[in-house]
Length: 204
Image (cartoon, rainbow, N blue to C red):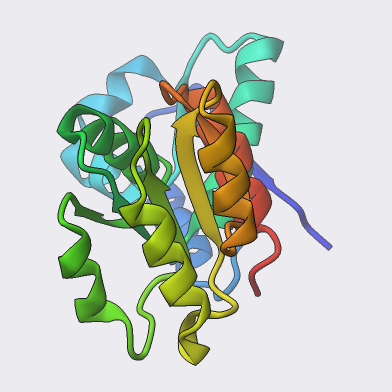
């Protein structure tokens, strides 16, 4: 099976054939992740820029390290494709940070700072993953986690808790009440990506 596609459009100017080829790949079901190498001047072609927007793009010259990072990023986008994440955190800067990171990887994100609003999407669940932030001595997200696990439609939905690692007891309570995994606060992009992708890889 093809695990990834590296499309090098070469030194020539962008042709109609090149555009048609990329469009044909884009229309395939379950298309593998693709990295496209272009010339610097191709970014001025609006049609081509819009067409390649879903893909990871590199501009010549390309180093081996840059290519490896791009292929990894493309694979992550494929895992995240069409996945829906609900993010809850009362701390708005943290909520915005997590939301922006997830959207940058191609995830469909719903951000929420009011726990009561989460119940609007409980039956049936409209998300593949729930990320909830908690702070010191905060019980409501953990109680919400428990309530979700007692709701049949949400028993199998992964719940990722974001909390300061110095709050040991809340972490223990989170696991006891159904949390799938724990993410440390403050939230760093690399750890967020690793934990979210690890969870999403298990979802068909």
